[in-house]
Image (cartoon, rainbow, N blue to C red; front, side, top):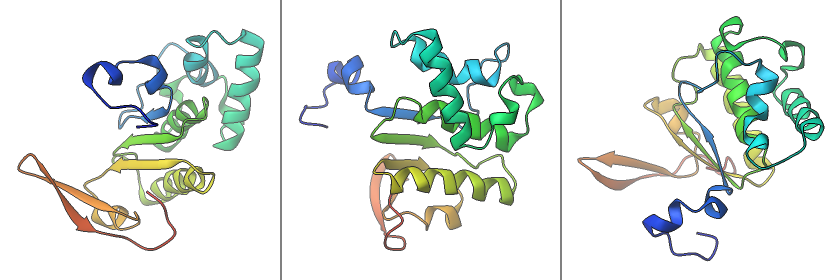
Length: 165
């Protein structure tokens, strides 16, 4: 990956992990923090100045259309808004690879489409998206589909051209 052998030690290396943005099924937002502060968390671990953190987080909120909700806590948001905040947090450090675990698993169809549109927009900007889903119609939007069956990966085919995955 990026010219490095992916040994167990390499996978723990911060330099390797910086290439990834993670979107968890349950979002993993910190309940006591505002959405703006939740999005800032990865920036604080990189030693970025607080004033720059706020600027970057506000830009990320704009990207996912959550600017008006910046001071709300996660329990004050809908499921779709929570996932949009999780996407903003994953994108804030401009990773090359996004890993998403069931990004639409608990959402209605309208929120699911908004989330996937955001993720496909990230792909259009040059990122790679790897997502896990049990939802077959969503899986079929990917360029490549791989199934995990009995502990082994098997190629399942490809989705439509040009979507990216």
